[in-house]
Image 1 (cartoon, one colour):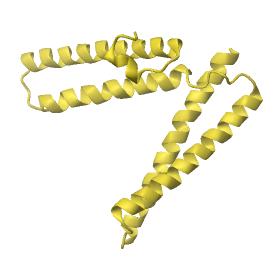
Image 2 (cartoon, rainbow, N blue to C red):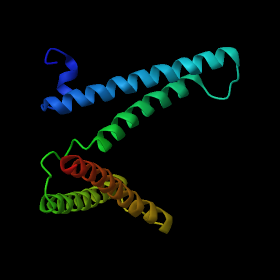
Image 3 (cartoon, helix red, strand yellow):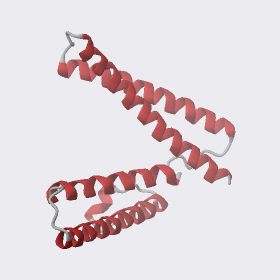
Length: 153
């Protein structure tokens, strides 16, 4: 795989690289099948409910989300988590990484957009970093939990 331009985006670990390539292949096949079904359906039933370019944008975003979710649920990220002490240590690390991300996100958001003047703007400015930090924690937690089960199962 070293002779491909794709190798600059893949991890050095051979197992992870192979699994990610499987995920990319699966996503490509699903995207092709969904696209072909859409094209056949739009040819048979020429309804103009959705713009073709918008549909194919959704297909690409769907492929990225599919690969991302497969990676999270595969349990490949935390390969050295075997004991409950390792698990607890990684949980603390994940929690503090998410908290740090949330505060950095908030600070950068304030620097870029400025301080809001009205209460609804403050809610938006506070809720977006909190939601982002929570999603980051949730993704890492699911990945850690899957890895821990995989390593001990």
